[in-house]
Amino acid sequence: MKKHIEIVKKNFDKNYKEYDKFVLKVVPKYKEMHAQVINLLKIPKNKESKILDLGIGTGKTAEAILEK
Image (cartoon, rainbow, N blue to C red; front, side, top):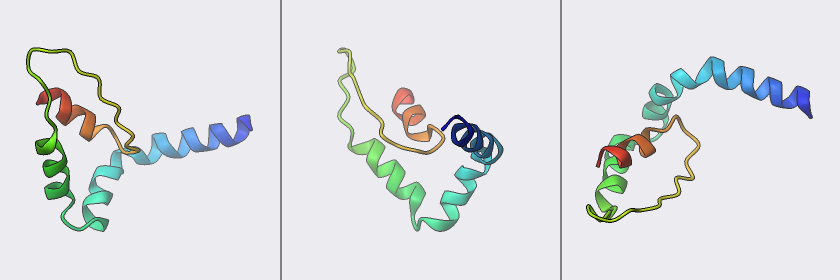
């Protein structure tokens, strides 16, 4: 199992930088869809919120939520 984890980590470290470019090519209207998801979130400004991001990308959604 440890060898499998090492292989996954090695491939992730090598390829994650290209993921954002790749997803734009293979998912039609990805930017629009992503923006819509962020816009639909109702996050109270004066109250602590907890959000679970189940994405498997590079953290762009979490980053956008934190900037909102």
